[in-house]
Picture (tube, rainbow, N blue to C red):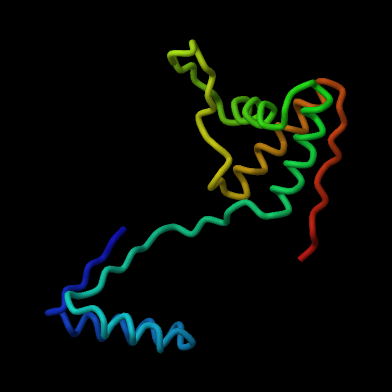
Length: 141
């Protein structure tokens, strides 16, 4: 969602500034600079907050997907593509090199929950092929 407050709507700009200053006083100087530079008005973008995958998730996945790839005779990239297809679904694309299978989703920009699905897929597929991937350790707090 995008909200535009035009320069001629000065009361709305002042109201927005007061709201922001009351809720985020540590950012008052930066807000003041933005408002003084807003000759034509302000654009406020409101988007849902998404917690991206964690560094711990990424490290765990890369370590064990790489080990599983070696076990199966695949490269880490081949294994990653295979797991993406299994976890998120795939489609067949016709290219000049022939038919290619591609995952419907990539892992970049995935939420923590979505990335957990990829990790669970790794653990399950590995178990089916009798390769043990230990469960991830959860941090308390």
